[in-house]
Length: 177
Image (cartoon, rainbow, N blue to C red; front, side):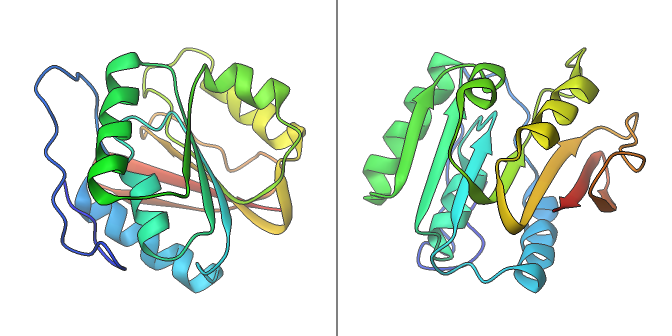
């Protein structure tokens, strides 16, 4: 796993073997950030990274100039891994919260320029979660919601849906409001 662009470009993040998660592939991440780059200026944006896992998406946003990233992760091992990498990279603008993404969304009153959600592919209530994200109105005007998911889900009939992209087993659905 590596940081693709920006001030931390080329930095490798070695995932410990005791963390059993599915990080977004470098190929899919590079494609994702090329799409975002055409929609948003990274400088000075505020980002919410739900189900942060390794923190890979958070590091990439900060590396490219995001003002603030809020990384929400419930798994203690993942949280400690993110904190360790923030310390190693000397990142000061990622706020890490250990809590359920569901609870965070329910309680959140802040708005963001980009919300990225990468729930477990087998999460039973993923459609309901995305509906809650949309109804919670967490985005500034012209904000982007991105949901990473398996190919078994189709969100094209949901409000704000703009497009989906597929990169092997990784799928992204984009919403704009």
